[in-house]
Image 1 (cartoon, rainbow, N blue to C red):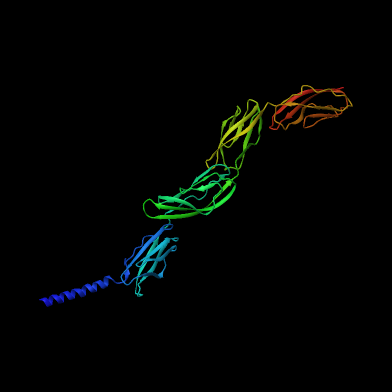
Image 2: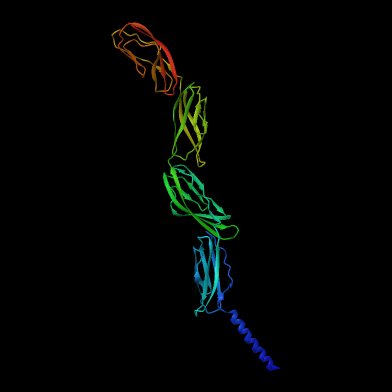
Length: 377
């Protein structure tokens, strides 16, 4: 009986040794590996464990290829790592071999299915800035909701501006010009699916400071008026509204055009509020002069003498400078002429009494007529 027991125990020992040998054969921990999906932009980290044989182990690529952007490294006696950021969508397979210290090896086929990008920078362009004016623009991402951190990785922002880790470009640019730079977004997924990155090159233009003037700085009481804001620099287009000082009878359109019929002469400092293409606001003031209504002020002409040089200047009141004179009816004595500036000059050839209707026109098109008598003795 005792002999039989010894034989059974010996047989069990042999079987246990045999099974132990099979269990300890050099191999990968996962005999049928299913690597997690890489993804364009995802920081990929996949550890491959090995067992049995003598250490250290070394994992190598026998054939095939890893997804572009990923690399294989040995990080421990029995652990290899595939990491990096995949750059190409598709399915990639590679036979990997684990080799031990005695150069024994085992091979397994690994397959990676690389997904398309699921997180990225959504901002494609930046609103222009204006030198000397405050600026703020928030960069945006799309895709998997993430806690995103931003950083500048190339080039430089315009002087006076900074990029916060929250993705806000802000500050007051100090000079005009164009700046090209690269920003990087690092997003830690809120659903714990990993960390993703994306980079983009952007250009920010800084325009000249805003300059505003009126196309016609003077209008005339009682005469239909039209004058427009002439805007230089800034970030057009602008939407305008009046904030005060507008002459009675005039209104401001959103495009900065002032129209209407002013009712009272005077000098007005008109306040205007503008909103530019970035949504930034600006407040300016422009001076508008409302001149009195144009009229001929000359009440009578001095008499002339036959054969003697004559010169008389017609006078006006009101109106907008840039006057032009003409004769609307009648005629000057022979030998006299009227200049466009309103001067009657020459040498009358014969005596007589002449009734002439003079017409004056100012720079905005207003006209006035008056009949005067000229006597030549």
